[in-house]
Length: 549
Image 1 (cartoon, rainbow, N blue to C red):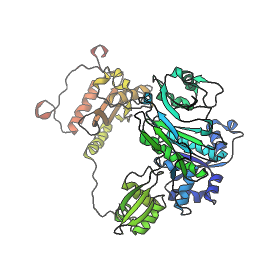
Image 2 (cartoon, rainbow, N blue to C red; image 1 turned 135 degrees about the vertical axis):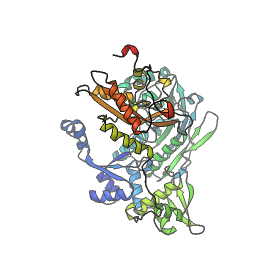
Image 3 (cartoon, helix red, strand yellow; image 1 turned 90 degrees about the vertical axis):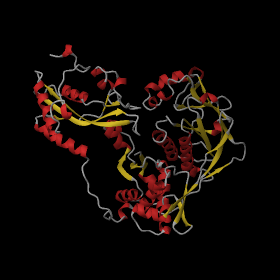
């Protein structure tokens, strides 16, 4: 869950009243949020870097609030305050409007060179906006929160905000060779080529995480104005020429990306949150985007849509008995303007552009439950009787664990994910022959694939415990995962048992005896007849004859 840090005094001023910490914690819970921590900038720095580094830092009290990952409208102070005020019925949810400019509309032209890098772009203008230091900080913080959340660390969408008065439209979104792009980036005093910037930002703690998105591409995306001034090189950095300041009055916002839908959502969120500070509140000036095929679209969409949900469905799913009128009132408190229509059991809900999280009727039911209050829902026994039974495979596994332990073996519990080396190179097997399920974006080299055998985990456990007195007798009963195209998820789990005996002498009779005991417990007779088992000598990549003692 994303965590939003807001200044307590600023929050209370915007809410129009003060709360004790306990009261605000309760308010957050009622609204479906959680007050995670009460701290300050000085306290945070002191914890992370020590007291010396914290000297001179602000003592202003900060509330850290956990917000649901899909509530993009609550990722800044403005959205949080607006949501709470509507929830407490102190204000009505605002109506967001897109307006056409008095003069020529701002135009963003996308060229065909962007097709293989970042093919989509949307744009809008916040006209006659007034920034203060706190508003400016909140504006920047919202962009960062969106980048980390819905934008997936700028891979899907990158946001750029520019001082429109320092630029001249129309704007062009194109892609060029890195050596052909040269501009002065934010916070720099001279111009650099794109190649030079990529080298500089490799040591930048903030920007180095985004370089991989375009680093190996032959062309880099870039946005110019009509005079050739660089606005930004998405998704890395904006140009210094058009940076916004406290004196900026007209803001041109562009969102480029690989996901058109998310780009539109991100633009809608930013303009709805900060149009509050425009001269004409909650109005956003439209911008035109021309795609390579010649088609043009006007953004932001700021689309409202209607959904229908029956009152009895909400009552049934939540477990309450409320009239349709009361349910409509509850939903209106969640910024979902609702009214009863038709036969008196049908509720019409208006979904605003800020609520991209409302996709299905169940999302509406959830909001009704939040507004009603989870603590107010009466606890009842289920009307159906069921008898719980342990899953047969798990029951067998538990029984085997007890008997393995009784045989003198110690259970190990190893990771289900491992490196490709563990299941391939170290076992003398080609990775393509393992049918391993690969992790698409592994965080570390230790967790690249799902294990296809339990043996590497036990061997690594032995390697980490070589100082322990011998013998080491370990076992594990867990799942392995292999690809299976016949399954809807493309993979299948198998329950495996693996045991290892580690000592100065081989101890084959120990493992042999353990195997016989397991087969006896499973009622599998020795011998090839009647589905029995036999032990045969064999060669494999794990143990080769030249390595045997």
